[in-house]
Length: 148
Image (tube, rainbow, N blue to C red; front, side):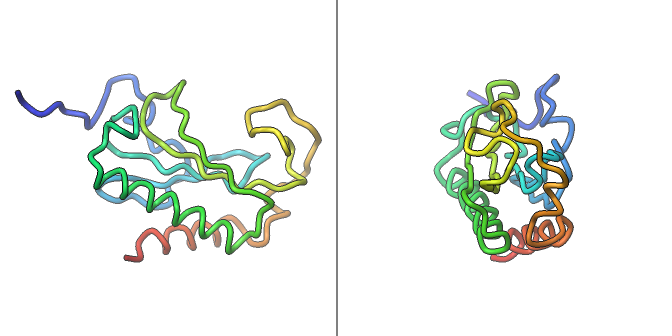
């Protein structure tokens, strides 16, 4: 039996576009920053090939993507000192393996609820409340992912 081609699926938005502001791309995965004004430090680690579930990956690739998730989380924690980091792999709407890594704050628009919950409060210029500009944060994330 031949190997299934998982590289691209017609109609999958993460197969045909980056999915946000591209921070770094490797042969296996990419990291993007989502454009979310309420949660500016919102990153996604996206597996490049089209697989729907984490267990679709061989163990070595599972480890590889989780190491990337850990590197993004570490940068966010060290650079921003958020109240909490949210990690999620849902894929209900886009069944293409990706992990959300989101710095959360007790002042953010939906705290303490999930980022998809109704807004709890109006927050003006959430990005301006971060400890550093987003471009600098993006550079730190990219550097951590390129380091071996």
